Length: 620
Image: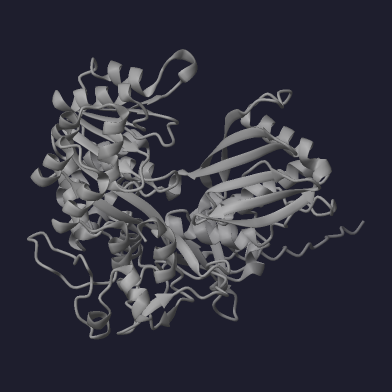
């Protein structure tokens, strides 16, 4: 019998999977350690590097992350050093319009955010994919992308904050605006980190989540859910100004209130009394605390949600808009061993941010810093913070009194509201402690008379106070759409600017800007902004643009009035002079009022005349 031999053809080998291409042509890696590269480029000092290396292992993080956390350098500087080390191109930022949205559709947001990777575009017709990333060492993740997109991967480095911002912007376009009248509209659960409901969940849950998400995206500070006679009106406060965002049928109000109360841990059965609670969520990759307050009104319970974005809080005196001469004096004041520094202003004027920035500036291991607050908005490392609880008689006064037995160097009191708190604060300052606090008055000089009105002896006020600072927050004109405006002479005079000097291009401020030696210095732009053309100022574009949401303004900065206690001011305080006399004496000694500081912001190209006049209307 003939043997039959079957010949089986060998299967062709599988095609090689696309691989990430590192580095691109024209760039060569630098094999030296990252720290050595950063020292050579002047990004960090050897002492800063040694400190970072000594604590890096305690936090289980990369060297660059430690350097940024310790504020020895910026994440962009780390990115540049990594780009040199790996031979890769680097970008500090990128407009969302230069990212292909369709590429993101094929990648879950959880994967993109978890690995800080974002496909940007195909750079060649042959299929080379450019990917934005913050960490060049994640080669396995790049290999996954090569498989998903069936393309070679070419890496471009960006700071993690910039990559995260792009991811949030690109993917937020996919999130739909939930309408209670259109129940077929649902969220994609992968769109955001907050608890989005799936298609079968109640539309109320999706509606409340959409309110929170949209407010966070707009960088709103507050959400107001207000019941009316027939409708529910939702308004967001963005840059200090309220605007309506949504309406819903009145029939849904009870369900919306119940949903918010459940999220905040409140009693859903109690509808007759005000309640306060807190919600903690991660929204678009950022930790956000929300303070919830409910109050019964004629048409039902009203809800206010205050959003506190920890990542957006600038805990630096250099970043809150103080002029150089003003900043120098404040730093001198908060480094004093004793005395009282008061920050004054209405609710929402940034007083808490200023105090936190002061504490962050002086926070050192050799100082014992204690705070008593209502509420504790942000936790500060190395500082003992106490929450006021009136129900158990833990008030500002009782907390402050107990602090004196804990050997403090610096004490921060959230607010001086009554005579008892004021007297204990003064006693603490006179016995060798630095006390920082706030008080509700319209200007700095009125803070002195307010303490006297509480019942504090004038000589105690004069001997304990070191300085008072009044402040307001004003909106910054959008740098993308602001336009030049030639002001009228009357507008300049109301602002406190000398018209003839302004149009001549000379020093025109009523209270000029001084350097550290007391010499007049010229006005220069701040924050990378451009000065307006000669003889003109910037004004907000009424129609706005996409970047500012059609408002003409984007972000806020502070205007400040710093009153230091000179001998003349001290004599007036002891004589129980009124606030007008004290303010006049301070201005004669070089104090810039709120409006004068606003005029400086106008000349620096930060804001508009209209905005300064709105914020400082009480000085008219």
